[in-house]
Amino acid sequence: LYLRFLTSLRPLFLMKKTLLKRTLLVSALTVMLLGAGLTAASWYLLDYALRPGNRGFDTERAWHEMDSVYPGLRAWHDSLSRAGAWHDTTLTALDGTSLHAFYSPAPHPTRRTALLVHGYTDCGVRMTHLARMYREELAMNILVPDLRHAGASGGDHIGMGWEDVDDLLLWSYMLPDIFGDSVSVVVHGVSMGAAATMMLSASPDQPSYIQMYVEDCGFTGVYEQFRKELREQFSLPAFPLLPCASELCRLRFGWKFEEASPLKLIRKSRGPMLFIHGTADTYVPFSMGEELFEAHPGPKARWWVDDATHARSYQKDPKGYARIVGNFLRNERL
Image (cartoon, rainbow, N blue to C red; front, top):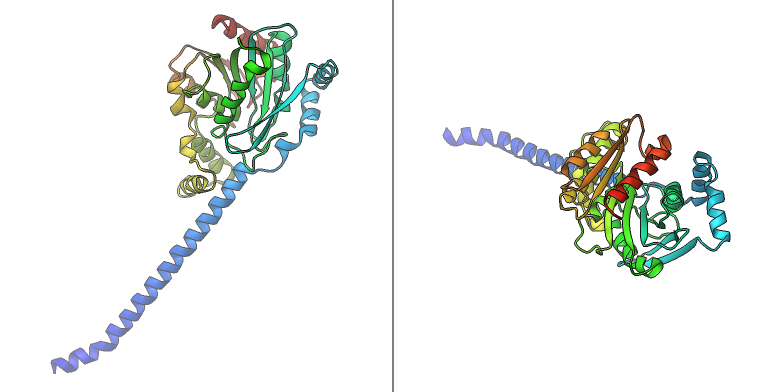
């Protein structure tokens, strides 16, 4: 009787076993599909962020837009070119990437030099308003690189400031050859260029003649900035897409989003820094500027520009911008 009972249960056991196998198979396929979908979405996010199109390469459009906002800028450049005071130069990065920059000596010989660093999807041309300020109003030498994947530089993706630090070091090593052995340098970056400037300020490999830094509307970190953009542009949470994209960035490009953190590195900054941020900035929130200022160990100064949006502090108050920067340089004895 007992054996008959067990025999009667056998179909039920077989059915449960088959159901379990099917459940495991469906679960495995679901996990694989979710994993494949997450990887595809992360790949798209990485290309969307680090290969966002050709705006940074369109230097003619950049000149047109800059000259419309700051009239006479193109004529200023052309006059320097005709006088032989505007030069192009290149170098080869440590990974073999060809990098381009333009430079111009000050109207009169000086050791005071500005290394100017442009922002995300921009190029060196979009820093010419500040180049003109430094050369004409502050009487300084200028060098303006095209960062990776911008302008006339090579590279197949944007480095978000993190990959640009080593390139900026190479440009800084060239400054004595261009402007003389006794150069005294300020590094001035805007937006992503400001993030690169802050991370450069913590590098133990920078030459001693880099004396100080100006950061204008830089973000606290790549992870934090991407998290904000995911939420605002796509209404998506950071997890799990952002950690996956960060790991994919490590596999493709050799670095993770979390590494590119000005907020962490600025605590090791080696020189005085001026912080500039528009109070109406919503792209890189004004609160990030406040957080970065508090994290810097000093010496430091700040200028919060009322009602200025992202990277528009100079446009909002060009005379005030030149005065604040000039006072900072004098106070820190550049």
